[in-house]
Image (cartoon, rainbow, N blue to C red; front, top):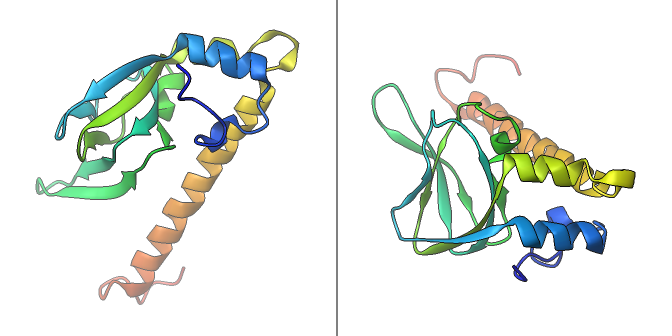
Length: 158
């Protein structure tokens, strides 16, 4: 799938061409309609996704049944990190905000690429690690803002 390139997906920056080509051979395109669920919270993980076109929502439902949108996934976004850990339950739901096209790779195949001989998959692994770190930093900042501005929680020290 030619749509996977480092100009669109930062996760592929500085990744050797050989690794990117192998990744392109392994991914499968999937077209999804508006409102279609990519995966549901609690589903056992298996796949990793690249958003080729469209937008999707990262959602969770609270105890009262209210859907909370954690973020909007845009073109160039990668998601489904738990796909690298077989049989791990998903922690959120992803729903298409309109028609979407994703490139899907199984966690097993992605792990094999990361372990590619001679360390060629290492730049991709580092980019995945940076992606996780950036998202953790973002969620931490969001939590700190909520704690600082929520009327019932603003008295807590962060």
